[in-house]
Image (tube, rainbow, N blue to C red):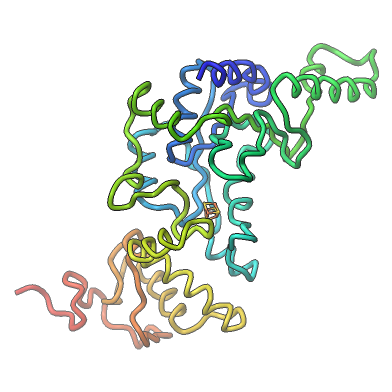
Length: 328
Ligand code: SF4
C-alpha cells in the first residue's frame, strides 16, 4: 500500500503538467480494482478526477452503484452504441478481436496521465504490465526509469529549439508525449485479489457492487455478454439481461440481411420514434425510452410501415393490454 501511495505521489507533478486543473485522469469502472485505485489515490492526497467510460452494454447495477457511491465520477459521453459500431465495422467483438475495449475504454484519457487498476494477478497478459507505461508501447518500466526516459526525450527536443528564444515557460511545454498518447500509471500492479478486498473491507470500509455477491457471483465486472467472460457468465447474462441478447441478435440479422434493416428492426425503429415523440401508440412497447432500452422485445411479425396502420394514440397504454382495455 505504501509503495502505491509513493508511486502516485511521485507521478503527481507529471499529471499536473498535462492537466494543471484536474491532475490525474483516473479510469473508473465501478469494479473492486477501480474502487481500490480511487481510495488509494485519495489517501495519497493528490489531484485527480475519476471518469467512467460507458459502453452501452454496462450492467445497470454498476451504473447505479457508481452514481450512488461515487457521485463525483464523470461519465464520458458516448456517441454510438456498441451495436451501432458493430454494424458499421461488420463484426461483433470476439475474444481474439476485442475492438470494443479499444473503442470504448482505452482511448479515454488521451494526452493525460491516466491511473488504472490493472494488476498482474488478473491474467497472464496483465502479468507483463509495468508500473508506468506510455501508450503505443513507447515505454514500459518503473517510475525512475520513466523519468530518465522522459528527460532524455525532452533533452533531444530542446536541442532543436533556438536557445535564445527559449524561456522557462517553454520548458514547461516541452513534453515527452504528444497528441493521442497518454502516460499510464498502474499503482496496484502488484496487488493480489486478497489485497484489494482487505483494503476495501478493512482499511477504507466501503461497499462494493452487488454483482460480486449472490446470485450474480461475478469475479470481475465487465460488460453484459462480454466476449472475455466465461460461458457460465454469458448464460447467466442472457437470463438476466435478455434485451442485450435481443440487440445482438438484431445485429446478426443486420449482417445476414446484407447490411439492411430487417422487418423486426424496422418495427423497433418505429416504436422508438413513437416513444421519443411522447406518444407511444404501440401497445407492445413500454411508455418511456428508458424502459424500452432495458425491457423491449419486439413482438413477432410486427410490421407497421405507415401511420395509417398504427393503432390510435394511447391504445392499451395503461395496462399494456393488447386489446386496449382500461382497468374497470
Ligand atoms: S468489458 Fe468486455 S465487452 Fe466491455 S469493452 Fe471490455 S472486452 Fe469489450
